[in-house]
Structures are given as C-alpha cells and as structure tokens.
Length: 259
Image (cartoon, rainbow, N blue to C red; front, side):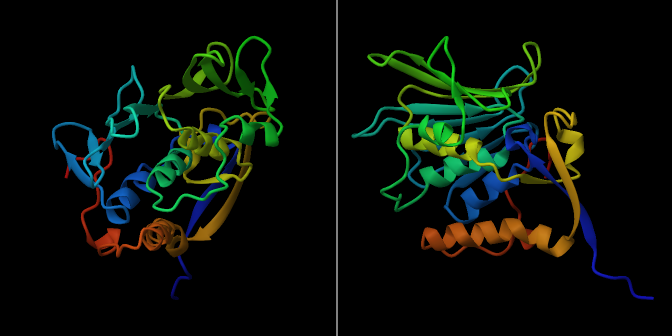
C-alpha cells in the first residue's frame, strides 16, 4: 500500500532563549542568497565567513569552545565608527537572524524601537537593583549595559540556569547601532516558541519547570520549505531575485562540514 505524506517530529520550545542554537543555515543561506553576501570557507577548518556586498561587514562562524561562535564586525565609515557583536553557540539562530535582518533592511521602519530596554519593559522584565540591567520574568536571562548614563559601555545578554550553569552569552560593542541591539532584545522578548527538529538533543535543559515543550508531527515538505520561504521574503524586501533553491545549489557550508 502507498504510504501517506512523510512527517517529521517538531518541538516548539519556550522560552526561546533556552531552545538551543538551531540550524545556522537560517542565517547563512538568506544572507548569501537574498542579501548578496559572498562566502568563503576552508575545507580543513570548521569555519564560515560571509562578507557584505560593500565589503564593510563580516560575519564569522567558527566553533570555539572558549569563545563566542558567531562574530559580526562592521568597519568604520564616514558616518559611523567600527563596531562588533558576538553570540555564543547556543544563542538561538532566530534571535541572531533578527539582528542580521535589521542590519540588511534597505528601508528600516521609522517606528522601530531605539531603546534596547523598551521591548523588555513592555513584556514584564524587571530592572535589577545592582546595575543597569533587566532580568526576564523567569530569571534565566539577563540583559545589561555596562558603564553609566554619562559614559555608556557595551551591552551583554546572558542566559543561565544558575550561578554555575551558563547557557550562552551575547555582546554588542559600545558603538553598535542601538537599532540592532533593540532588534536583538525584541527577539529575546518575543513570547512565541521556536521550532526545533529533533531539538531535544540541543536543549540545555528539559526541566518542565523551566521550559515548555510542545511536540507535533508536521509535513516534511512544509518544514523543509520554511527556509525557502524566508529566502523569498528577504529577497522581495531587498528587491533581489534569489538564485536557484538551496536543494539544487551548493549553499554556505555548516560548521564541521567538509564539502
């Protein structure tokens, strides 16, 4: 008898900052195919480099057990200083992607938040009493800006399951555009779950008192098409025509993959 449509098991995880890193292709493929970033890799090194069309911005993905896996560097220009941002391995790709989508937006909205703390305040995060920071309602995520109002410093976000159980950390330089940091905090504050395929292996915890996990079967064709939908949406926004689909073209390699 013919079998029915193929399905895959999908986990929907909240809070999203404890969902694990996810698939790096969610970031790398749209940057290349919809935004025109060029890529390079070394088949002997688990490393991916993506460069913006103007050669001013570099995204580096390099697994490093002692440092952040994702690093974003912007060169100085006539109207802005150089800046950087970095993200740990378990930072959800959906959150990092929001930063890159904001960076590459050719027509950013006028009403986009510019105060990175504002999305946190609007979703019930509490200010900390010891320093300039906000903590998530469940206490597992903390966003802080170093320095003072007179001399502001770098931004840090830290996900943790306890004093000795860090999950991931992200950082933005003092000079990073506020709209990018605000896009990052907006994504962190988003209550919607993120989807993971076979994601329980990448979860930092399965404690039901900390995360909510809803599992469902979904058609494999729809799951596989999510990345293509994202590429098409970004290409339309950027008024570009994406190349042939990922399935028939060599995409930017994933860390640890040798072509």
